[in-house]
Length: 150
Ligand code: 8DG
Ligand code: MG
Image 1: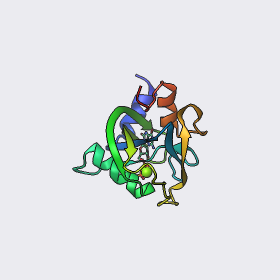
Image 2 (image 1 turned 90 degrees about the horizontal axis):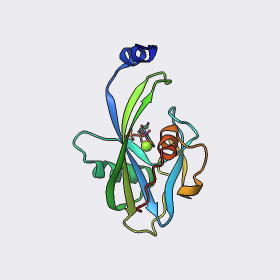
Image 3 (image 1 turned 135 degrees about the vertical axis):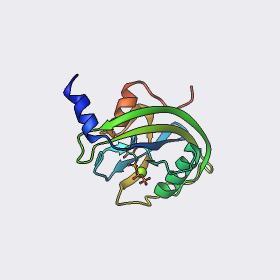
Image 4 (image 1 turned 45 degrees about the horizontal axis):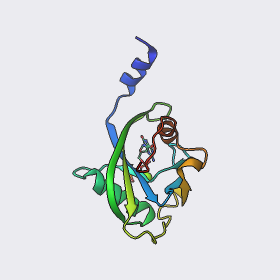
């Protein structure tokens, strides 16, 4: 048994569920640059913690509204990732649920509602994503994940 197993056991706390929103508009997806102890200055999809009693869809709609003021139309479950953040002062584990969504009104533009946590939102092509990506996102991209319908 290696050291890694010991570290996980010593730091085990609650496992959190995050909902990550792939908001698609035409060929573009919405990303923002994080202001956070986790992944500071990296680009990530809008996301947040699942709250007690919420569905994934409700969480995605709430987080997107809180962070960008945007309203979601159709929304679907895409995939799930399991991420360990062991290098932090407070190690954590997240199950990240990826949702695909489109805007209720495609003309609506994102607002940066939480400037303390995000530098601003922008639309990017999947084949030309900004760098650096938040590492859990970089990992799924490397694994071939693509939120656009085929
Ligand atoms: P809240 O307190 O407002 O509910 O949450 P938040 O402050 O908006 O949380 P967040 O950092 O935006 O998102 C929750 C966590 O999700 C984040 O700290 C790390 C985790 N996470 C993963 N994988 C991914 C991913 O691919 N993208 C994003 N954006 N977050 C991810 O484990
Ligand atoms: Mg967030």
